[in-house]
Amino acid sequence: MARILVTGAAGQLGRSVIRHLLDTYGLAPTDLVAASRDPATLADLAALGVDTRSADFDDEDGLLHAFSGINRLLIISTNELARPGKRLTQHRTAVAAAKKAGVDHIVYTSMPNPDKSLVTFAPDHLGTEEAIKASDIPYTILRNAWYHDNYMMSMPHNLQTGTWYTAMGKGRIANISRDDCARAAAAVLVAPPIGNRTFTLTSAESLTAEEIAARASAATGKPLNVVHVSGEQLAQGLAGAGLPGFVVDMLVSADENVSAGNFDVVTKDFEILTEKAPQPLAAFFETVKTSLSA
Image (tube, rainbow, N blue to C red; front, side, top):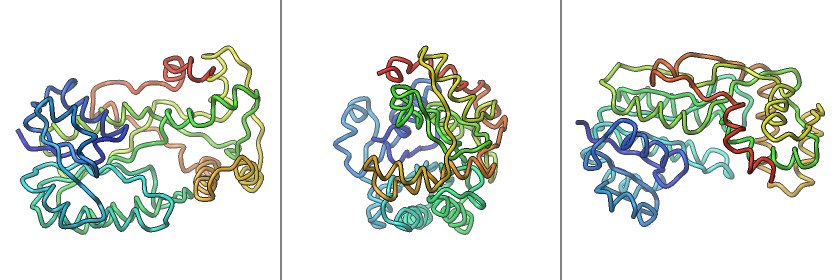
């Protein structure tokens, strides 16, 4: 079996990928390497027999050591969003280290349509895809749609107040759960090589704000009125709530990207990779309805 390394292994997506590798696809712990900036956070995986390594995306020499002996590498995009351009620099460093280490295949978690997206961090993903392609390392790019899970940042508050202010307009978005994206990544990592491919992971339905609100209401029994505002009005409201500027810009740009139709993408790529149907948003809301109602 190929030796597989997962970066960001202490994060939510990384943890889920590792769980699917071990439990869903039966990978032997000794064939898996879990990497994090702080390996101490991976002690439970080490206890299972998983090799744990330090991986600091600001340290190319350290990454070269971490990637040594690795056949398949999953690069999970870092959470460095506060400083524009920093994340892309980190990703380029990781790709360069992978090239020097002789990694056979890179899998990367990207986003839908990064070449035309209005989302503030889209250039990070597009630039990383370009760096991977330029490296001549065989690759699989997984363009993960906006997670169902992201609604948990604001939807409980919306349901509490009964109002959801959004700049999505009449746009539609095809979400997918973080866990489904993790399962797809694990499936790619254990599958035979299939050449350079790009997959866009979405649910089977693309929804308007009103349809999303209706599903949240159905799960919780709470009414939710959608109020459409401009991007500028949304930014003022989010800033007034005390959110950092880069977070405000990110959230507004995501809504505006929906309004522009750039998240209105539905594919069967998740089913192709996993032979499973993606979890619908309504089913996701049912699983978290206690937290939604909090």
